[in-house]
Length: 139
Image: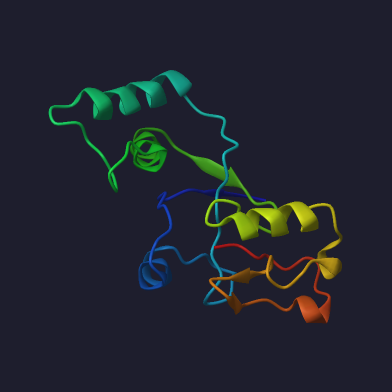
């Protein structure tokens, strides 16, 4: 299925997500995530990023130029939709160990993946022991 995207937020705090990122049909502590596969107005996005870089002073988020705030600005200008894909989100950017776990588990069937890949922030939040292969495991 698809859905209208109302906002794009990078790694929101859990309380913010509970208040602003709730999706009907998902459990209380389940949220959707996006990954870098976009079909969008690339020239406008580059213009928005360029505006941040060329602004006096440059507009930085968390000390660097970020794509997410520019995606949010583009979303505000142009109607944006997402496609829901059921699956597992692999976190490969927060530690070398998570990257290795993702490589070890990416090719495996859902019920054979290790719990470290299927957990978030060290807290196992899924029903993988129930072999529920269609459950959404997303932040």
